[in-house]
Length: 467
Image (cartoon, rainbow, N blue to C red; front, side):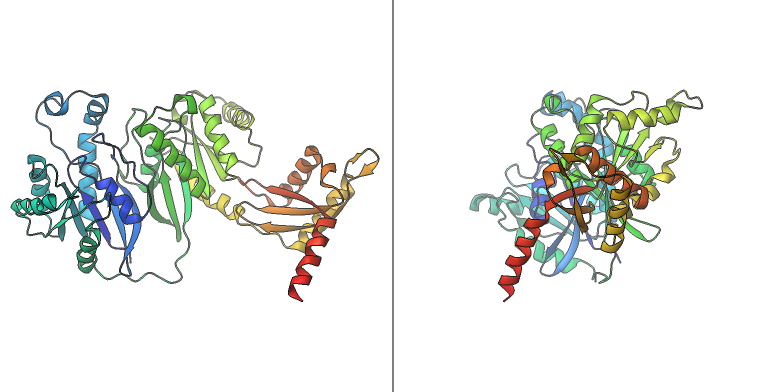
């Protein structure tokens, strides 16, 4: 049974995203004074009075008659949003169709407008519970003026609120959760694998999301920068719960424009931080660029597992060696070793897209792999016997034992006589030895080298504490 869904709808710039962030308790949606900032559906879970539900933020529903210049000027943001009006409306209507309850957000400072009436006409055709949130009601006068929204004739109660300050939101939620259908979360529900779709602008991230889901879940456009928020979509693949996170394109730091794009990039980076696996998309027609290496650097810095997807492969002229040569260049230029799988796909045609989720799940399993201490130390002894550790100034590196300290990513602690004697080439040798034995597909490994004396001192300290 799915969680109840509450959709936030309304005309542009009434504070839907501000209310969304307050309800979910995090700044997940980009908030900006420019109308049209939110374009796709964004969703996250919330809880009120013990009731768990999913909140869906939507773009501003707007029907323009005549040029936008006659409505609110010709600012770049306003003109740019014109390109997406029909897509934004479709996304909002899909959210309404999926919702169990709807919060119709209006602006108490502006009063009832023609655009509000247009949204009300759409909501009037639904038989779902509707609650009118008269936002920005930050004064007694504005709260009294909010009764004007009863003129919409929706047979819905009006709740004067301030999404920014939280005033009145509790009363609104009391009414909303009372109207939601019952939901009981499964106690043994499998934890979802979080997969972030990342890359520079216009490499096909949203197209891939839609292809994986089999529906138009995100607006797809050839215009770079269409996706602004990190969009979480839950799905089930062969019994495994998966959360796909579509993100805004990440530019090089010097090319990130201030304002909305800056916040979008920050959210994309946060999406990488909370993901288990990153799907790094590369445009096959352009090859590996400096921006691709920039994004790969973020993934490596966060020690995330990764699958490289070379998209638009259908547009590349190929011979018998094209794929092998391209994969070699990808690993070389992105500083990935052979442990990272490289898939060649076309999100547009669906070519090889069926390999994406199985590979990502396999990579996630490698990220959670734990090696028993006995097996790990037998492998270490064999590696040392096969290739003796280096020495420095007549002092040779000695290994005493090793243990795996954690997973995600797999982290190994080696106790040695002197960590300063560990050369990076020998560390790489140990990593290759582990990968040959256990794979660790697409997953970085962390090695920690500690002096045995330090460990013994720590053990003695622990013993004293327990006496």
